[in-house]
Image (cartoon, rainbow, N blue to C red; front, side):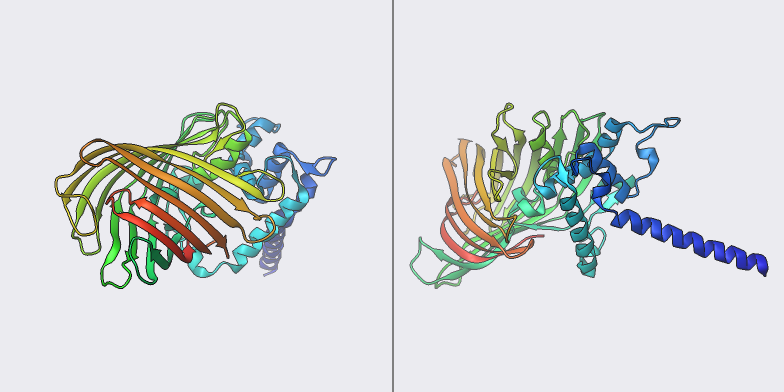
Length: 423
């Protein structure tokens, strides 16, 4: 009985010590890892992040190695450092105060996060392999269009619903909705230091509905089923995961780091009554990084001023082949239309005030296709918008679109005021 009591006391003491150790690692201040100037350089931040995450020594030390290799530490924690750059909006050095603020905000968000936001494989990613080194399943993504699914939540445009004014038809306001719902399945491959490739297969359902004012029909009625296969190729000289959101900051920090996003997308488009049928496949590519070592950056939001003004420039060339199996009232294409088209999209966005209040995004884009074979001719779509984000998931948007929808080639001239949602 005495031995049992001793063992029980020892067990309680050990568990108490373990809990205190874990809590200490979670609550430790970044100031403990800062240099004499109270700033954290890249290697100091890597050590701080490793300590907070309770990373095992085997991640940084080879068998028999007794001293810590700083370069090995930074390489092992590169993904975490990239996330830190994305969250703070700048590269090293960081102040210990801003890192402590991030830690507090992260803990608060985890405590406030409702149960439905913690469903593995549905609302949070289910990792494949050890710590997700082989890929992941999910989570569900709700965005404006298929091309927005590859972007991080904070940089993406959301699905919209609201009132529209069709300038091609006289009448009052009507309703409009557009969006895409996808479920990504990721596979990650590491090809030695700094070279990585990630493939993502994402079943997507997209829609675009715009009511005709004063009529029972719609001006736009499009339902899309697609299966984009996206390759994130990172040929940089440091370890990078290849994902858009984790490389966006790293590429801006290192002129030699860059990311290619290559997409092949087979698709089927119809309407909600399944009257028209268009089959096709589209290929596109996007470059993320500085252009030829210049200060011109492509692919993600970058700071213009320290007061919270950012810009984003995207250039996406595209090749498209499609065939119309059946025509309908919601497309100008006829049965037998066989189009091979070359084109692309150019977009310029600005973000104002994210550091001080809910951000205001304004921007414009131009998408075009020229038919190299078939009767498609030249088609284009101009869009400009302003969105005030009320939270990370919802905002109010004012949008204007004019031109031809990309697949059905339906002419539109719409002013839309509504709500925008993304996840």
